[in-house]
Length: 207
Image 1 (cartoon, helix red, strand yellow):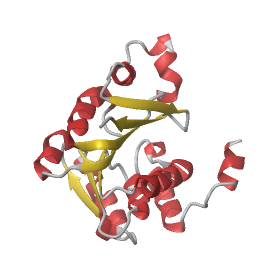
Image 2 (spheres, helix red, strand yellow):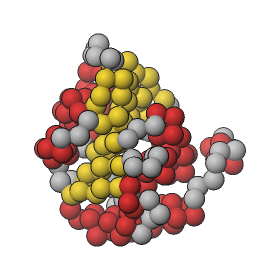
Image 3 (tube, one colour):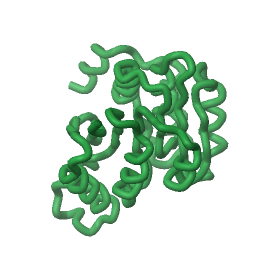
Image 4 (cartoon, one colour):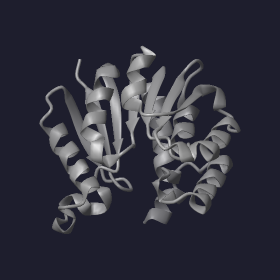
C-alpha cells in the first residue's frame, strides 16, 4: 500500500532523494527524516496555509525544512532550530546547497530559548524535537503563533507505543502521551491526528 501511495503522489525531487539517502547512510536514526510522503504533504500544507514565517523545532538533516521552504511564496522564511551541534556540518551543507537556501535560517541551539528572542509572530510551526519535552515546546511555540495559525507535531503515535503498555516506562513514549493528553484538554486549539508514518498532529490555534 505504501508503494502504491508513493507511486500516485507527486514524485520526490532528486535533491531530496539524495539527501534522504545520505541521511540514512551517515546519520544515526536516519528514518527520522520526513521522507517522500510526509515531505510532499509538508510542502502542500505550506502552499495551502500560505505562511510568511515558519518555525521548525528540530532540523535534523534539513529534509523537512527544505520541503516547507519549497512551498513558501516570495519573501517567506523557515526559521529552523537544531539543538544537536554534532549535526551542524552535515545539515548546513545540505541546506546551503539547496535551491531554497535563501528561504531558510538555520540555527544551532535550543528553540525554546532562542525562538522567542527573534520577535517574530509565526503563521506555522513544525514541532519535531525532543519527545520528552513536547509539552514545554508546544507551550513556547503556541505563544509565538498568530491567532488562526497552525502547528504540526510529528511522531505523535510513536510507532504505536502510545497505546502499548510495554513502553509505560519509556521517557520518550511518556513525553508523547503527555503531549497528546495535554493537547486534547487544551481549549485554545483544535486538533486532529493523521495516521501518517509515525503520526502527524495538525493543530489550529483558535482566534
